[in-house]
Length: 394
Ligand code: GLV
Ligand code: MN
Ligand code: MN
Image 1 (cartoon, helix red, strand yellow):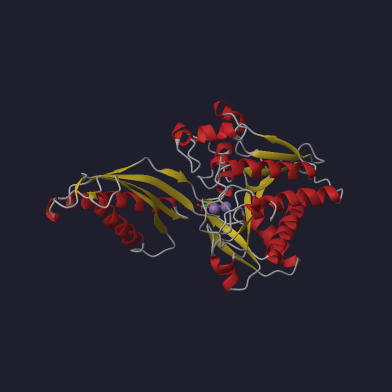
Image 2: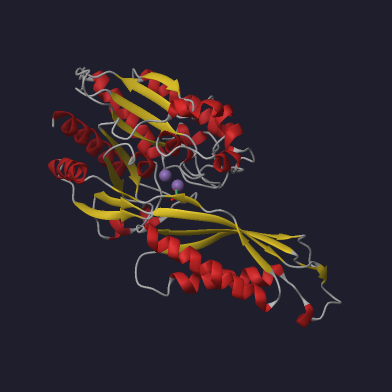
């Protein structure tokens, strides 16, 4: 963990290792070296994911996949993605050291650009649209450029696609990123399902004008409309029962000067829930609320075509394997939903998935203050190993 955390380390702690950055390339090179040391046959697929294979003894069986990601959000922590990635490699390493050959072929996958919308794992499952490939990522490069940079080939993405039913299963270990396990003093979370996520870039067109000479009742202030909209997102999302969430995570006002009324604002809207119909409905409601808000000061809202990560349920049998593995090691468990997105939700299109959570101290994530205790990480990795062995015996 500490070796990986050097790549993209922030002076304030944590990492900024956004996909397709120099730090990402360094982290990936380090992960590849670990995977080779673990005896895996490593290659970068056409989508830029790092894949390491270990043969099984029964050629008739489909592969069992383990994985996560090592890219981070800007000013992120050292645990989100890294814990699951390094533990998956560790499982391969232990199998090698113990001379254990599984019946299933094993594949360790380090997915590229999870934080930018589960891009690498989506390339395996649903595939990537042109709109996604042209989207600008946090690195400033388009996804298409990024895929090329990390050693993939955006013109041959079909080669990375896998067919539904082509895998035996997929396990992912991850930090909880919420505070429930710590609060309830539970060792291991068994994930029931992963939320779906809808993101849309909202543009508000007003009219830039002099901030001193334009009377208050004659302004088309795009930032005022944005402020009203942000308030409305909170109101609408909290107006119904349930665990749905909605966020405006970034705002850009132009031209951006003390003495100019903002003529244009762009902002990032996100809504999440386990129920796709529910979050799609919320999005449509926000679109009509925005139209009404715009009329108040004659500004115009435009919503970009939403990008959606579909929600996914985990597999009942794999949940049971995880729970049994944890209990056999003496750990307490609880089942719980995941409010964060994960590569597992894309891989769910290909076959059964199971996810293991370990506690996040203070429930803090996507922050340099993200922390999970070494003992909890070790517990999670041991549960992952046991669950893999049990899966293989079934
Ligand atoms: C990924 O971390 C997400 O939930 O946005
Ligand atoms: Mn993650
Ligand atoms: Mn994350």
